[in-house]
Length: 137
Ligand code: THU
Image (cartoon, rainbow, N blue to C red; front, side, top):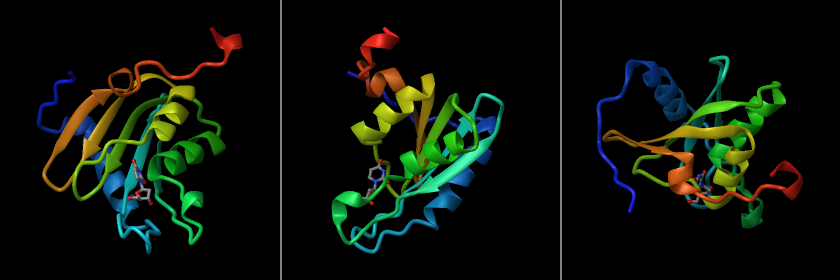
């Protein structure tokens, strides 16, 4: 059982949380109307953001988390230390996004933010056994 606690936002994370909240405003979510924003902090302290982008062919939708991670990787950043997910009410990143995050991080901090506050996890709390290619183990 994973323990969650509502805590004060550390000042170092507040910019990152604000960036995720801002990104949620750019979500393209005409089908679900669920506007999600995400931000990642890379090992050299760069911030990248993303939002969910939906499609009339629903399964082609991409989550906010993967948009943010792919933005970082496209800019040459391959090590993510923190992921923030912002939604009006707390949501948990889907398994696909956690798996993608595991490719570019080493047990990063995951901050789930909503209108009321934040909760903190580590990737291993939410995805204890990611798939790794046999050549990497
Ligand atoms: N969604 C995200 O962007 N991130 C998540 O962690 C879960 C779900 C999006 C996908 C879709 O556009 C909408 O939320 C479904 O509610």
